[in-house]
Image (cartoon, rainbow, N blue to C red):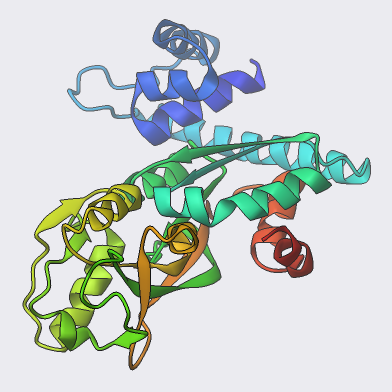
Length: 301
């Protein structure tokens, strides 16, 4: 019985999906089914209760899953320790994150990391926030990066930065020359916002409710780039993280106005599954993101 069999089986149980397990392990769905049958034959047990419509393990299958997780943990831990002994920083770092972070926050970190550890391959996948959590919980990714992190007993949450939220307007907008505004000044403005289930939208809605402002967005989008394009054509104004509009401000495409009073902050955090063995490459990347190499990051920016 190869270690790959336990990995495929573990992913199958975690995702409850033959197709996702196949994708995670670079094999076909048929291969996953064949490996499952091979494991049942090897241990002479029934692993999956095929009489149920939903995916469900038998008692023996549950025992095999728990033991397999321990075997995988020990294998990954040994592999990580051997790399550390040889002082090797290589392999892959797979990141799942939302568009605004992946496009505007991550690049300087990745640039510095790859300059320091060129043998590491960093892959970034852009996802909606809820999908990032699923990816981490299902071990589909090494690291998740989100805004407004939600507590989960299965996840390790590591804060690493806070974005300042600002008002963004078209250069021809009547407020374009202002340096700062009160949120109450937006009560009658056309707001361009994120879709209702996106954490940043929930935070801005909360800030408006605290001031008894009832101003629903006239347009809603699922990513920051589309919101910015709508503001550029003067369809309305938007409250966005400063980091996501810095380039447009420099190019004169958008005007950025500070918000008076208590600033609206957007906390950012790294996520990985609790108990996960962190490879040397992943550990170094987390160290970089959490400020242990802040001088190098500042130079890259």
